Length: 202
Image 1 (cartoon, rainbow, N blue to C red):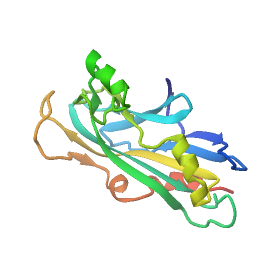
Image 2: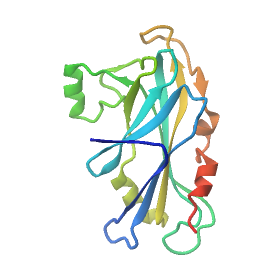
Image 3: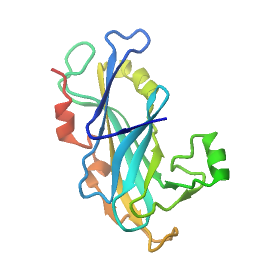
């Protein structure tokens, strides 16, 4: 597998079946300077550049629950044909996730189902300053197949952290969270409006 750190957004030009010109796919993390858990990279696997989101606990606390949000849309003026003066949302997914239990048995079982990336199958708390991978609910193939439906020659995917719940120690607790939340990521379709504007087609 290939890990790509997200210092800047990632851009790919890929040609789907019967699509001319190829669809441009751009993957951008949302800038969240105050977030206790940060998106720090994207992990690819084979042809899927969206296999996993890499996150890191930026605090000295244990994290019990993290909500990761993916949103994909066609930027302004990015229609394959005709005008497109407004952003159009294509799909949006938000998923509660946890760190990965990397014991031998759990890793073996989870590797068969791609559930090993924080979505179940041996989840545990995220330790202070620890980094882990969260399975992406979006794939390059799915987005390419969706692009013609939305008349898109360019697809922008934004990834952000919606909320974080801490624990009182190194074990899961029954406390109610979240302790930190980003209402923009939770409640809006465009996670980063400035980034979306920059990605408009000429």
